[in-house]
Length: 135
Image 1: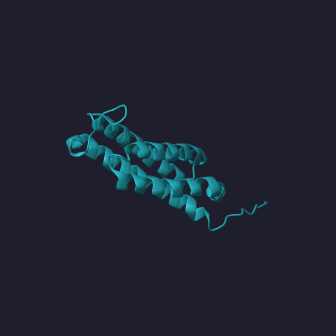
Image 2: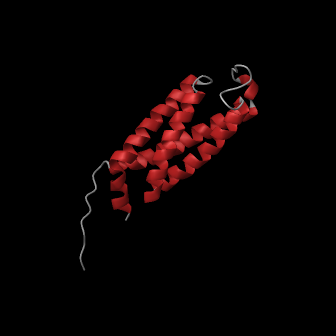
Image 3: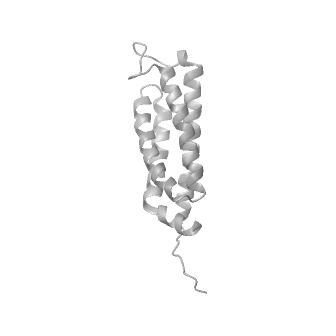
């Protein structure tokens, strides 16, 4: 019986941290999306539109995206290899959508963008270590 030693550093915690931050960012999007759908009249609007949709339309988009981001974060936490690639793409898309939302809710968007940067760093630089640990 042969055992292969796996090289895993303390940085693997960053990947799990990224998964947890994705869950938090997903929850932030769900909360923000629900709030925009339910109380769209409380957001500041310009000519009844925010880019292509009204505020309620962006709320639905953020709600759906938040749910997908939440599920991908859970998959990253349990060590799914495919989830790291999907998560990196979703986190980049999340940062871009937050830039479009920044005119409506700047502090919230900046917070979510900062979380997205931390998540991308952990997934890209140290993602392979999580795969090695769970395999």
